Image (cartoon, rainbow, N blue to C red; front, side, top):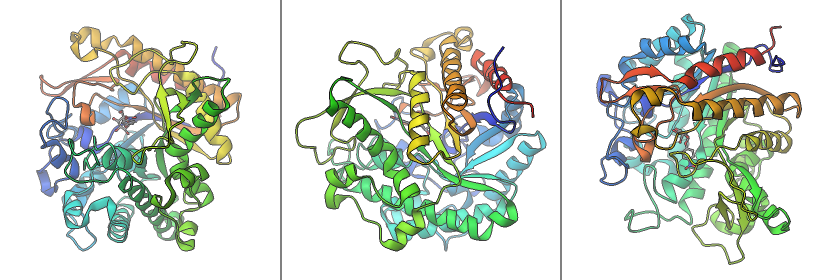
Length: 479
Ligand code: PNW
């Protein structure tokens, strides 16, 4: 018998994102996003695909809700396509009533089925109009003002939403979009990949602007909506667990901590403490923007909850050379094998992902300690499966590897709550269904549901879709 250790109102369910599932890029007045444009550049997406059709969810909301129902999910995290709401994106540009109507109805339909919506305002699909007009996320004044206007438009339109997420994984927008250049808009110092970009500087500017936009939206929600609507708002940060490559080497132990600071504390320290981590200030110097006192005050305290996306773990080995100007890790190496030859976990279809459930528990404890035991929603957790896309459908549906991933990670979560006192209030598995896996296209599947892209996007629940519900229902207290 599993002991019920999770609070009675614990929200569990599944997550998706607009560009990864919706399709219908030009329908009902939607404008292009930077991902529509990025996908058109040859060689940026592994299979040359795009989100043009994806799971066709724009036309299948009823099917998606029925799918959620069939899993028993209590909650669903999805994101809004900004360019459906404001096609060009800016605060003086026209708002598209059809875009608002689509998401309003979706929220109503979810609620009618007893499913709680968690809504992400920005999951990477910036209106391309803003990128073209003023450089998008690089332009502090314009971007913050336009995002604030968009956020207010959504708060006003959807008072029934009680859980708002300002940004999904600002680390990915900044580093993958402006340093490595593998995500839209693809800027990097690597001239074989892009004619424009400065990996040593732009990512830190973008991160700073995202923090200010987040904090501005939170201020608006708290001042104009929170009392009336009674909701909460926070940001979702990604972060991998870390273990020193050589547990005996103090420099590896230090490097492991620094890795967490460069990925998580880059955003969470300003939000909880009003300043960037010392390790980043030291390494980046004047390339790391500084907060004015007003900005620091705005950002500090701007989280009602901590949204945690988590997938994997690494061994961390310190470097002895001077940091490269383009370095974003904290002058260290991330490895899958430790000094003594231990593997962090089995391979998956994603080069960066190896399951290690203990890492989830350890990272939950680290976040909880560093940030004063915040209320945490795990807003993404899941895995791809090596070679899954090449299997016949019957075998894809029997995804024991993914089911085992969820068993291990959900058990780790339960222990973090019951034995370590971490305050976890929700868990969204990534993802409800196979979808457009960004630069990896459709060959990498993360769904608990198989989507038949050749057969009219029909959905077939995998084994993993059926095991998550019973695990949580046994873990959640009845009163
Ligand atoms: C997250 N990495 O992205 C996103 O929020 C999802 O949209 C995505 O589909 C999911 O994880 C699976 O990839 C990440 O390279 C993408 O370390 C890449 C990395 C991390 C997270």
